[in-house]
Image 1 (cartoon, rainbow, N blue to C red):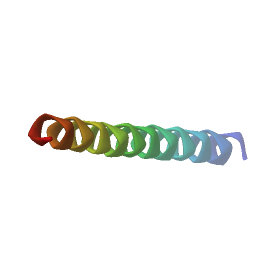
Image 2: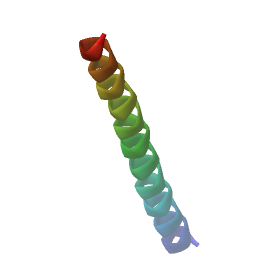
Image 3: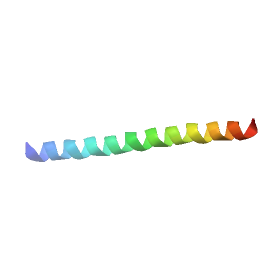
Image 4: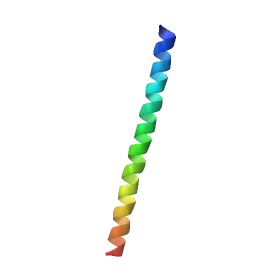
Length: 41
């Protein structure tokens, strides 16, 4: 039982890390795009 919970927790942490990373890269892409557009204007 504890072993299963441990694996589930590990999977959850992996998923949280992945989603956080994708969110950060998503905002970074928007930010760089915005700066790029500002430079053109």
